[in-house]
Length: 69
Image (cartoon, rainbow, N blue to C red):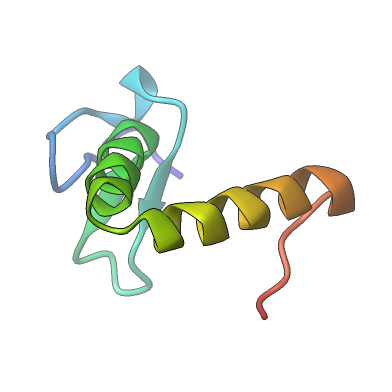
């Protein structure tokens, strides 16, 4: 990943954040900080989603990776 990639949401450059995930076509990108804001917004609206997300994150730690259900 090159340092010229910027987050489509906050406009931060890649070298100023932990990670930026880009769309396959490169048309959009989101940084880890904006993902965290999204998680907080979704969690505030859906406690059920938050519980599912917590389980998912817990599974990441125990399995060393992620697996789709």
